[in-house]
Amino acid sequence: MSKADPSSFVSLDDFERYAQANLDRNALDYYRSGAQDMITVRENQRAFDRIIVRPRILRDVSKVDMSTSVQGASISSPICIAPTAMQRMAHPDGECATARAAERKNTCMVLSSWSTTSIEDVVASTTQDRQSPKWLQLYIYKDRKATQRLIERAQDSGYSAIALTVDTPYLGRRLADIRNRFRLPPHLTMANFNDQKSLVSQSKSTSVSDNASGLATYVASQIDPTLSWKHVEWVKSVARIPVLVKGVLTAEDAELAVEAGVDGIIVSNHGGRQVDTAPATIDALEEVCRAVNGRVEVYLDGGVRRGTDVFKALALGAKAVFLGRPVLWALNYNGEEGVVEMLEMINEELRLTMALTGCVNVSEIKRDHVRVLPQARL
Image (tube, rainbow, N blue to C red):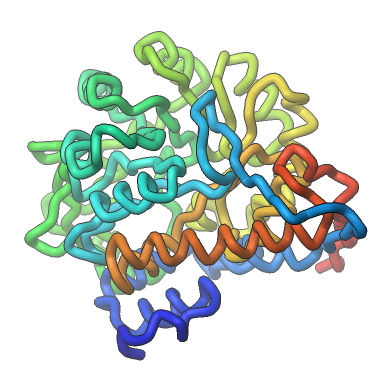
């Protein structure tokens, strides 16, 4: 499949098909792989099909307003960009292209701390007079000073929130990465570090096992597996900006997150990359929202591929959704312009879904706009 007439791209799946035909296998498998048998990866999308939309008719929908806000920052629609690592494997402009696309569409972008472009360079690549909100995704490193320094750099650079990933004391078992002995191409590094923390390679001296991927080795050596709720409170004490937790899937943990003082919750299973057979995020969303009961904003990532998916997530309580892999596929297709095209496509799908269900703004999307079908027993 060649890069040709953009009119041939009519859904987000078309961007993925392009990437499957054009991306380097090492990068493609890293981006698309999940844990073990990838059941959760598939369920993240399939679960949306078990939710039906209940349209309301004969309402004036000549004007539809999709604007909303995240953590107090106004954005053009509830479709945001999730953190995905090492974007320069997809396109030379990597995270800078994604940030410019987010800015052009006035939406929130979350930068991975494992980015191949630094916190500062991503900001420098965007225009200063039209800044959309940027958050930094954060892991807690064994080296607390390194962790604190990332927070400080994000704050100093104008990032407006920290999204703390809390589901990765160890890396999930990703079979494709093990088979490929995944590593970053030699011309790329983890750009937010200038020492051994920037290296994602596999060698006898650093491996946790002979068949570990480079990233599994890296996580085992650098990320703190003693992570607990007290560490969330520590991040809160260090940061001057809102702190959200990313990776909550249960009511119990949602309650603990609120008690720890977080400013928001991202319902996420890490794109199905940590615990296989964990619930699809859309299946976990309503449970989390009920536990939170409006005390903090709740967001969702995982499996969103259509405007109807966004609508369903909003109806079940999400304030906004975050796209991960579709951004990578669009980035591979055509850099900044590809990401803009992808965002425009799914935003138009959401606008049409809202109009066809009688909703003229996102606040009108309610629980009774959807019905969740019973799941078949395994």
